[in-house]
Image 1 (tube, rainbow, N blue to C red):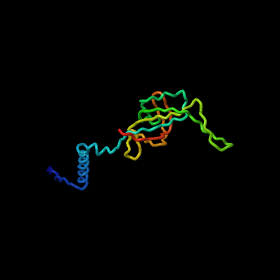
Image 2: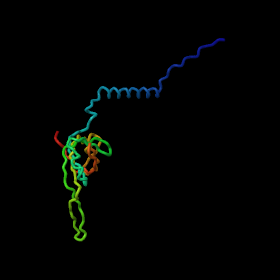
Image 3: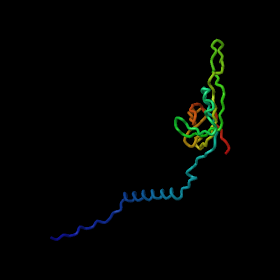
Image 4: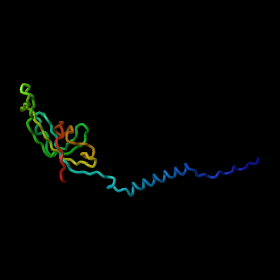
Length: 167
């Protein structure tokens, strides 16, 4: 029995091996760049500014007057985002608008037991996208329907104004 050792095959380097090696080197290079050379300022291109906006709550029962206080944290009741802090509250009588069909005119009269509440809220907004993004997540514009929640009150109304405030 004469057994001879099988001849050894030499290792071959082909195109698949070269592509695999290039992918590994590229991934390593990107990881090193992100960890050591990528600054936070270039990644964060957001442009934040302080804004004050007003929400008008219409036809609120008069017994709820005084439930919204300056300094209350405001949360959007539907999406549960924090959308600012109350800086001012104004109360006005609710005025009902009706139609006089005989004369074809509008008639305005006080609606007893109800008021309008205008809540001024301050927040930080990102304006880099061309929209006001409160805390970077809540898109706000004039005419947006907003459901607000503060510790003693929940209500809904429309945003009637937005203004940027100097810091």
